[in-house]
Structures are given as structure tokens and as C-alpha cells.
Image (cartoon, rainbow, N blue to C red; front, side, top):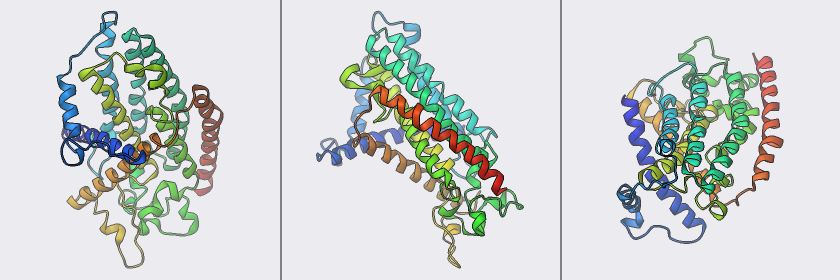
Length: 365
């Protein structure tokens, strides 16, 4: 319950910060000011927008299928928010420490496809239906390379627990398994005692060179999963008005927008755990300078929770910033280009990575 309340409040606050940040970042890229009038440098603009949305009328089209139209945004939001239940924010703070955390996350988040299809179908609007069909085809296509890159990490880490994967990427791995001093693959071949060094050298993206390409594939696929530019054709304003949520207004529309920013944060958290060390510090121990120890804090202590949450959130927000940066930098892909990228390039590359990861696992064991 504590984790639920924390993530609910954190999720809402993050959405306000992300929307304001996106407006300011896009304004900087386009050489303009962005929000400036409401509050200092427009910092209260999001509060004003929130109050406006709450007061708006919940309009339901006469021809819409109300049994599908009304609950659809709730299903989309619930599926995405439920994914935060197994995110290890610190060494001990998470909603549910299930052993098959990755499997649960990929399964529960995939339910948002059903919600999006309900949004488009229930609206009884051709633009909404076209947008929903585009979104379903896109998400299903890019779930394959994304899932394969996750399989690569699972094969090397030999666990489905997000918390254990995080521990393997830090100096505290020996606190879970004292016999695992040389269990960290990749750097083991260089003869480096990773549990003593810690820091960025023990992150998956560095200790297993294959994971650099896996991270790139995962990040590209996560953009498509989030319907973010250059993969935002399901909500393309130029031909679909507003996409699958064209007929929504007020609170239900805000749920769909919250879901978009929520999936951005969720895939960023997952990328941080799988590839970027999770809540572990990026600073290594160098000689007698215990930077990694000092900037991590012992797991289970107050400083351990504080540092862990700081690094986890900082890394995730950095990836969210990159997603926003990409949106205002690259043009939108055509539908055929989007499908070609997934089926002709990302999926074959991900399959090859799975084979190489299996070989790496056998050689390094």
C-alpha cells in the first residue's frame, strides 16, 4: 500500500514536470519561450491546465458504444500504472518483489493494446479507429524486438527478478551470493574484481559488450511502444486529427495523456534496471577512494534508500529527456518505413543478439 501511494503521487507529479519540461525543451529547440505567463517562467501553467481539464465536460458521442467507450481509458491507464508495482526504486523499496518480475511487467503492459483498441472502436469514429489499428499493429510489431532484448539480459543474468538483476550490476552483489565474486560476466574475462570496483563498469551495458546494441534496439522499440516521435503515426494530427483519442475530452482524455507519459517513464525505468545499473551509483571505487561505496549507501539503510532512489530516478529522467529531445528533432516515419524497421532490421538483429548472448553465457560460465 505504501508503494502504491508513493508511485501514485510520484506518477502525477512526474506528469506535471514532464509536460512542463517538454514544452520548455521544445521551445528551446524551436527558438521560442514556451509557457511564460502563469507563474515564474510559466511554472504554474501545468496547474492551470490541470484545473481546466478537471472542469471540462465529459462528452460522449451519441453514436459511440458507451459500454466500451467509457472504461477504455481506465484500462489503458491501469495496465501501465500496474507495471510500476515491480520496479525496484531502491534496494528494498518496491511494490512486489516477485521472482518473475520481468514476465509480469511485459504481460501487464501489453494489456494497454486492448485498451487502445477499445478507445478507437468504442468511439465509432473513422479517425479514431484508424489510429487505434495503427497503434495496435505498431505496438505488437515492436514488442518482439523489445522482448528479445529483454531475453538477452535474462539469459546472462539467469533470473527474471528485476531486483536481482540490479544487484548483479553493483558492488553489493556479494551480499546476496558470497560465492558470486567472479559471477559478473564480461569483466571477469579481464581479471577485474567487479564487486570491489562497482560503478559504471559493472553495468550490463559495459560488462557485456553485446548489450550496447541490445540497449539501442530496446530504446528504439520503447519509443514505438510509447507512440513517441518518430513513431507517432497512431496520433498523427496531419491525417488523423488526434488519433485514437479524437472523441475524448475532460478527465478521460487526461487519463490517456497520463498513460502516454506513464509508459515513457515505465520503459525508462525498465531500461535503467536492465542495462544501466538500476539504483546503483555510476561512480567506481578507485584505489583507496571509495566513491561507489559512499555514493550508494549500504542496502537497507536510510542513505542506501536515499542514494538508490536518486540514481534510479535521475537515470530514468535522463532517458525521458532523450525521448522528448528525439520528438522535437526527428520527422515522423511513414507506416511502411515503421514496419520495415521492425521486421527487416530490429527483429533479425535482436534474434542474432539472443544467439550471441547464449554463446557468451556458455563461454563465460
